[in-house]
Image (cartoon, rainbow, N blue to C red; front, side, top):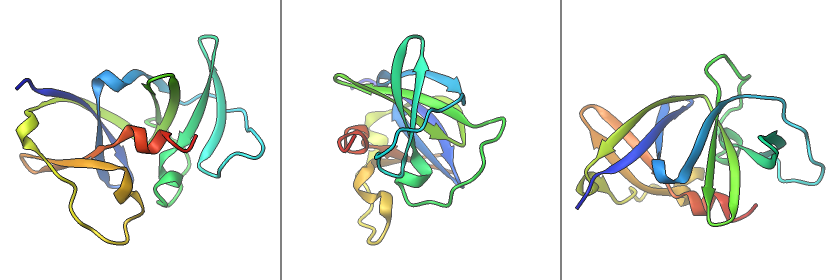
Length: 141
């Protein structure tokens, strides 16, 4: 069984991860055009190399406190099937190789907004990475 390559990023004080094969690029935050009538967690759209890409504020999507963007704020452009969206994250930290057997099922935690979006957790050294289930995050867009 081959390792899984993950992009690790930060939201508030937690580290999240998504498989590299679902990431198209990582960009600096740019001007986002608001779109009326969208859910509150959809910030708007950007024109990324000629492609209009919806932008999701993951903090808002997960019910976390919002914050002003900083120099380390990034857009992770992800795609699944025919959808491509940008996820606003506090920072994109690194790329890790994780053995698939290190991925544990998500904990049965009640009352966490992001619980339905969690595909598993990875414990590596002293780090706990929350592996996101991208399709669940994208399905309502």
